[in-house]
Each structure stands twice: as structure tokens, then as C-alpha cells.
Length: 108
Image (tube, one colour):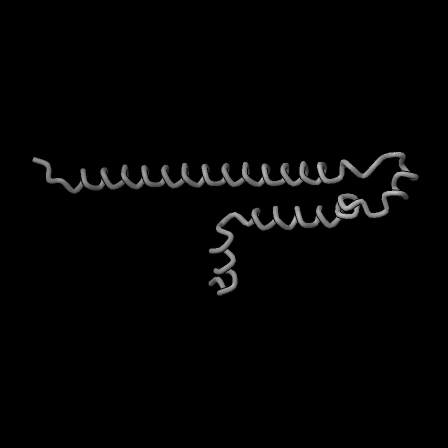
């Protein structure tokens, strides 16, 4: 039997917890890329690599977009599969019900 916390989690995030994983991954990437985004230590970075810290924001946005797109595609695939499965089981139930109704009819 599910606990109240598990039920609230499932209700809030639905049956697709990858939404939460997407947000957590994006937040973790932000923590990793933040010093580069705010150009902390830019003189040291420039001296060590010969490059500026300009691309860090774009790279973080690109990685976040890729993670969100992967999550959306996974959600769409799981939803489509669940709908097809529900449609197939409904069709099967209707077929079985029609067969049972046909058997129950009195034959002359």
C-alpha cells in the first residue's frame, strides 16, 4: 500500500518522475557551470587556457535543452505506449464481451 508521501509525489509529478530528474540535472549542471557563467576567475582561466569564459552560458543552456528534450521524448513515448496498451485492452474486453453475449443468446 503506498504511503501518503508517495501518493503526493506521484500526484504532483505524475507517473513520469523524469520531470524531477530533469530539474535536478539542470540544477546540478548550473552549479558546475556557474563559476564560468559569472566569469569568476576569468583572468586565471584566460591565462591558463587562452580562452574566455563566454561560451559557458550557451553550453549550459544547450545541455539543459538536450536533457529536457530527452525527457519530453521519453514522456511522449511512455504516454503513447500506455494509450495503445489501454486501447488494446479495451478492444480485447469488447471482443470477449461480444463473444459471451453471442453464447448467451438462445439458439433456435
